[in-house]
Image (cartoon, rainbow, N blue to C red; front, side):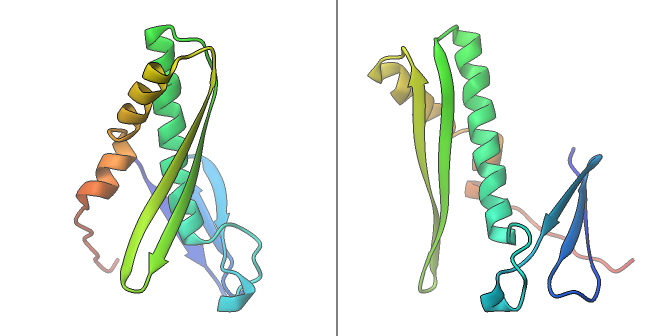
Length: 128
């Protein structure tokens, strides 16, 4: 379904990523020894959830023919001690009522990436 390849050389911690036919990058901030030239891995994780959320909600609004003009998802990864969570805040623009917005918020709980993160998944690691 999806594939990405990440590569790192000797520059701390500049990472080249190929996802499909797209080129991306990742890095760490100076507090971890990087140069902050690209999003860090947790920012990429938040980006994935945000993208899946707004794409799914746009598709839903189009299918329902609701006059949604924009959907924004602010995603924050939060770590408090040994607990971690993601906070997601939706902003839905357009001539939609509170009930429609509530329905879209309910739908956001069932986007593919949301369900993957909530359900967890097995990660198998092998050596090439």
